Every structure is written in C-alpha cells, then in structure tokens.
Image (tube, rainbow over all chains, first blue to last red; front, side):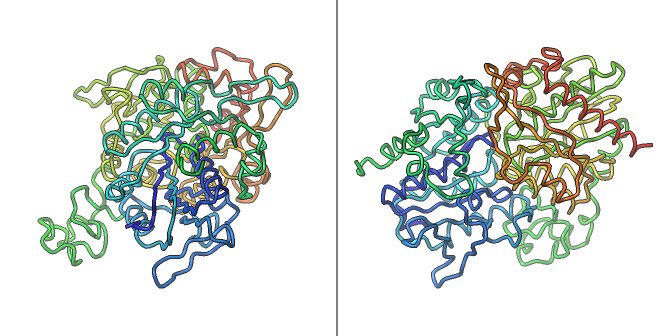
Length: 259
Length: 317
C-alpha cells in the first residue's frame, strides 16, 4: 500500500473547526509551489471540505486500469486530490453512515487510488479519535515515513480535545512532527488593535508540556480566508503574510533537502 | 442502522438486516441460529427502556451541526443557563453526546466532578440547582485520556447515558453532539424518536465552508424525520473592543445562514456576535449571562431562547 509515496503527513486535531482542512490544503499547495509532487486525501466523510477549498467541486473521479484516478488541480498533475465530495451527486448530499461503512471507504481510498509517484501525501482527517482515525492508523502502520501534524486553536476548550489526540498518537505509535496554532489573534483592519479572540499562546504551552515541537502560530487573516474556495496558495498570493511565512518554514522543516 | 454488534465477525450483515443469519459471513458465527430465527431483528429493547426513563422529560432538543468548532457546546451551555435562569422552577438537563471530545464539563465549570451511581441510576452533576449535566468527561481519569472507540462502543455509551441517567423531572433535555452525520447522531435520533424528540437546533457560522457541512446536517434531519426548530448563526460579527469597528471575520460570501435558510425553508432563529469575553468565559467555565447580562450576545440569545420555548410549547399543547 502506498509504495510509491515517499512521505505521509497526517493532519489531526481532536477539535473541529480549528482549521485542519485549511492547513492541509495550504500545506499541499505550498509543497506543490516548491516543486514537489503532492497528493491530498480527504478522509472526512461526513463533512468533506477539501473540494470546496480548492475550487474543485464539480470534478469527477475516473476509474483507470490501476485504480481511481485522483482529481488534479493543475495540468502538470503536481497536486492530486481525492475526497468523498467528488463521489456525491449534489453538494448538499449527506453521508449518513455508521462506522463500518466509513472504515471500508477509507480502506478503499488508501488502497485503490492510483497516486503515481508522490513526494508527499497529505491526509486531512475529521475531528475525534474514532473510526476514521483508527482505520488510518492501522493501515499506515506498515508505511515507514509517516508522521502527524496537530492543529489547534489557542483556547482551553480546544486544547483539551487536542491533548486527547496527542494521547491517541502516542498510544498508536504515530510520530508527531509538531503542533500548529491557528486563529491566534485578529488585527482590526481599522485601528490595527490585535485582539486575541480565542485567547493566545495555548498552542505553544501545549507543545512545551507535551514535549512536541511547536511549528508556529497562524493569525486570523481575512485575506487568507478569502483564498478559501479559490485553490490559491497563500505563499504565492500573499508572500508577505505571516501565514505564508509559517507555511514556508513548515515546508523547510518537512523537506530539508529543498533548501 | 443494521445493528452490527461490537464483536461481530467481519462482513456481518447486521442483526437487523434481511440477510441476518443467512449471509456467507454468518457461517461459523455462534449467534447464527439466533439471527436466522428472526429473534434478533425485533426493535432494540433499549428503545422501550429509554422511552420509560425519559417519560418525565417534557422537551428533548438535539443541538446539531455538520461542522466542528462552530459553537455547539457553547450554544448548548448558554441555552441551558438561559432556560434555567428564566424560571427557577424549570429544570434543565444537558447530555454531552460528544464521546471523543467532551467540552461541557469545562464550559459549565464542573470539571473534575464525579458521577455517582445509585439504585435509580447514574446521578448527573448539578451545575446550579436546576441545571444538571452528564458527560463522558466525568468518567475519564485524566484530561489527557483519549476515548479511542469505534462506532458500536460509542453507541453503547449513548444508549447507557439515555437509559441509565436519573435526571428526575426535567422540562428540557439538551443533547450536545459531535460534528458529523454518523454513529452518535443516528443512535441519538433512533433512541429518542419514540421517546418524543421535539427537534433539532442547528448551529452554523457564516462562511461557506461551514454552511456546506451544515446543509448536509439539514438533509440528515430530513432523511430521519427530525423536525428542525431552527438555525442559529454563531460568530457572525466581530466588534473591535478598541474602536468598535464591526468586521466580518468569517465572511458570509454566499449570503450566510440567512440565504441557506431561505433556500432550504428552515427558520433562522438569530445570530450571535463573536465576543472574546464569551470565549474566555467558556474556557473558565463562568456563566456569561451573569457576567455580562447586557451584552449584545446575551440580548440576541434571549430572543432566540424565547423562540425555542415558544416552538416547544406550541408542539406539546
């Protein structure tokens, strides 16, 4: 399974709405801009956000001789995407499935997608520590180059759930590459006063307590928010933003040979 | 839906399915005869038990959203406090059905409390005299403990919460759920339908990436026949504490909840602004309604609560 993939990166968080899909898509786009071949697999079956974020909503997955062919963002086929969103006939369709059905769908995503040669496979997950996560962990155990990036927001309510996710990684033996803090502060466009809407510093202190590398804080930036639904990389559109600095630093850490 | 047991063999068709006891996977299963005889395909006996247990609960409301982090737990706790503080004779219970990420103990400020078991069942934890809470958070030894369970075990836990918690007389039972349209939601709806479910309150934020998932949740409600009491839009506006400029942090590029509600024909109950003090109150477990009774968020909340109460009382009379 995934023999032609050099490195697998799981994007995890115990909490919902912290920006897992935003981090996954921006990470994949940044890697692509740096010249890598990237795959992005969305295993959030009940709430797939990746097709919308990358502006690929009406695309279809085709069956090829070696398996499902992912949807490519660009003509050079540097970024391939797979999501259950491509298999639904309408964007309003709900996937009302219990665990066993979700498990077999994810197994299919892991086994039957023909990714070709990939430098990175980024896997976006739903919140929690349940069926989807257990399935992915069990199947990725044989894949050697696999690590997890944990996404959190600064407030205690989110940190509490993220601590559970860290325990999950430790129990299942998936190495944690680091923690990213999202939505750290908001700069008022009028008076430039920075408000920590969801508190601040929570991600850094969590990283210290859990002895995990801290990979940076991403502020709330409406300009980055506007990139959602367009499939554009922050690093290319907004090169001076903090977001693009965090992601380019992140890619340096993940792929030291690119420097 | 088909009731696959926790310890079933692989490819078990489910005890409720037509193939129960007859599929190829059933060969060698110790329960094959029971399934084949049809004894297992009757309705789940827990449904009747839950119906009796919850017969003293007047109104049951699910708090749903397809999307995570939109404020389901915050809204549930605010709603609980608001209902309980309206009238001291109104008893409110909150059930936290988010098994993998329980937030209610923190948001309501009762972390570290213990649940006691007595002859009449589990006693919930009392936040105030007339507001009680049950959550898996009370059953975990440490906040780092992860609940790494697949669906059937989560369903078993929800079944136990619904059938074994001794709520006493309740006017409102609010059920806080995790994001999605999967095990927890199906189980809660399945068990509560015959006990009389008033409906679902759907929480969203204004941006399209959230609405996309919330539309799926509304379709889930339609598919399962759960009435939608209304949609609440959270985090709609941010008012800068320094210069009072209003800004949209999560811009409603596709018309926000209002547009979605008119498209899908569900009522929009109102919007709550994004208030950093509210976020702080949730972290510290303080009652925001008491801390800032005149803030725009509380005023908006009170009018939403009035609408929910009116709908619930209309349907019951």
